[in-house]
Length: 256
Image (tube, rainbow, N blue to C red; front, side, top):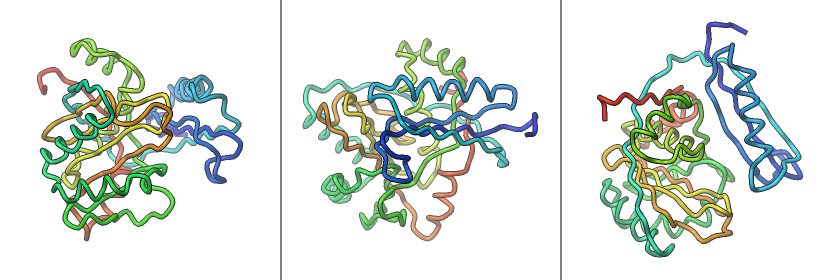
């Protein structure tokens, strides 16, 4: 291993079987690490897998690979929390926010009707002109990877914004920042497949990261991650960006 390079360290943990063989997802994560910090990164991800509220996994997978592409540094999206009383109210607010980003109303409604079908691992890509799914996958979506936000910088940002420095927010905001930094991304709609977590968000470059306190019912394990995309002919380049372009989120106060 080259001590001067950056490495992607990925973890997946599942129950009963491996992910490839249809095992139940327990936890996952990714860190971008220097050679010297590889042991810390591996231990951090293992600790996450071992202490997830979903239970103890039966299978662990740790993958480490060198990152050859130049790393881009991006300032995080702005964050706003929207308190709602019911799931219906939260999903109506999500519709409104998606329209605000420029996604046509009929495309939003078409996507909402397909959400049970879109409850797969990874992201579903929807063309905003046709409403068609364009990622070319069948039983899974596109995996967004190679992004990180150094903990010290994240905690400094959280303190300045008076928000919780939770690992969950760090992971979600890091991913949304990478996704929305690409010009083809019009908006992202997301809520977790964690049955104990009802919060979700709508994100885009122009409205930031809009956290909604209820987007699904407690106990529901059907997650949702939909990217509304304004492209078709260059979809392969867009998918390559999501999967391979390394991103460090780096908060700089004067860029807010």
